[in-house]
Length: 370
Image (cartoon, rainbow, N blue to C red):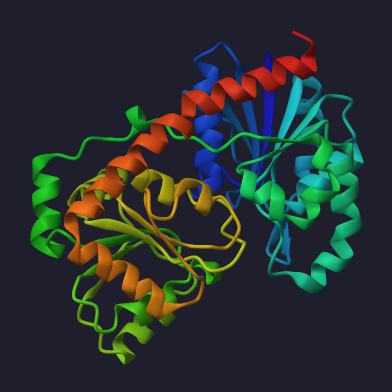
């Protein structure tokens, strides 16, 4: 069985949540004999195909961007060739250029669309794009939502409810590195232990400005790992608030991430807008048995984190409520540990890459009549 995966970027160039999801799908299905190819874009000139353990990656150079959406002229011919090779085409949504590829080339193959997020921010551009989106989703053989919450709350998915299945994103813990004792000790010397951890890209919907407000007067420490468009703004806010309990550590390796998770008390995820449709880093923390703090935005974050069981779920954009949640875990270590155990148990029950891979293989086989 041959599957073509289509998204704007992949791990060869970018380390985002959806890229990680594609990697995990390909890794899990390749172990069952599925042949995967990936079509994505890159800023590199004249890129060559890259063979990874899970898939062969075909990259096309970005020619221009419009409303934060990358476009490539070469992608049309590359997509046509790869679509002819594939038995099934598997899109990760949203990427409006992929809608255009599908509409122009119109390959007569089963189309699977993993619906990762509504388009939230580009409201004016969305008015022009919406007809293309509706055409694209109408042409899909099957749409996959990553949580029951998103299926229920997405205006777009409500229109196509009869063809929406639910397959949660999953992770394979075995591919994560075990940090060395030196790595753990280096981080312990730098940031201590028993802190709250955030890992992710500093984007507008991540709610980090709310986390910084919540940190004011909070007894515990917060470690923020990652970078992004709002990094300088957030550091200026922390300086303005004179926060001495917040530590920015920048981009980190996978080993460093596991080391920090190991040393942390709990994981904070203050995303306050529906652009945060699932939360891969939130799931990673659950996988490592950490209690979680997230906000109720009607998305997959509240499928991963069950309030009062695996952690605490508070109202969005509410720094007081977020501070109270951190203080509760900080002051009640036994309850925090129990929530962490429950979070890891929920990961093993619902969110492994093996479970996700088997679910997608069953979906592929259904539409190929295997």
